[in-house]
Image (cartoon, rainbow, N blue to C red; front, top):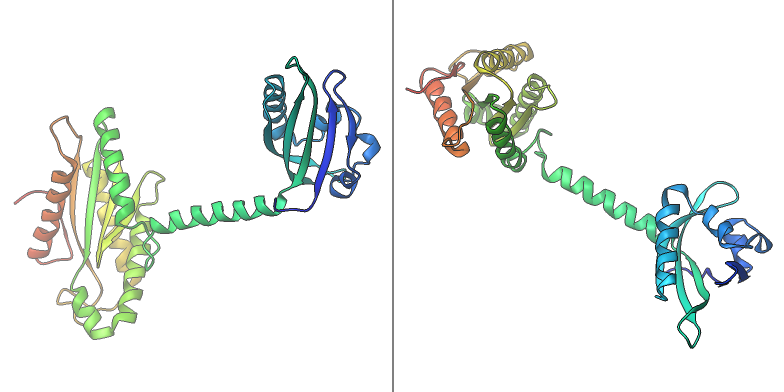
Length: 296
């Protein structure tokens, strides 16, 4: 066991009274050795969130004559809690009936704290795995997870689903002129603008890769998707990110492909995504700094 604080105890099954508990219990929980009289004293000193399931489990296992272990939070006399592992052996008479319970309480607080830290780290890593490390918006993995789910929801509900795929105009020339450090900062600023435009809780802004982003807009019809695209352009223009080698203007601009669909049974999410991607390239071919919402 992780701790040397192993506290022995014994309970008489017929009376449900402690016939012994080790004196170490007072050092661990603050309750005097003499205060542990019945199983009620034990139960009442279990954290209320753990009490019912712990008591019911231990009673059920004991009635079956099965040795068992239980982890729970015990309440100290000062009102704090300590994680306990109770290891229980059921002593039976020759006829199989239960005579007593004997066991040890172990302080496993350090182990639980370490486990909690591991779980928290795992959660943080999972969140990071769905975030683009450079810009902080969702990454392609997140989009590939959320998009199919939103497609199914839209199909089942009959509500529209819109996509806006965005590409920074002449970004290679920006990088070549200003350098990659400034290029990274440009990506971050554009991502911040797009993420601000997709501010509703159900909406998603993701970086697909390079200088390409996507807005996933559930429940958004064609007109609202247009408005969202225009909002992106307005917010980006307000940033006034200089681009001396744009060929479009003096500031960083974007091109966008837009589409809205109410998915039917015969529609395919990948086909729709490819269609919006083609519209993006139509916008670029038409001169950039614009959006396209129809097929050529």
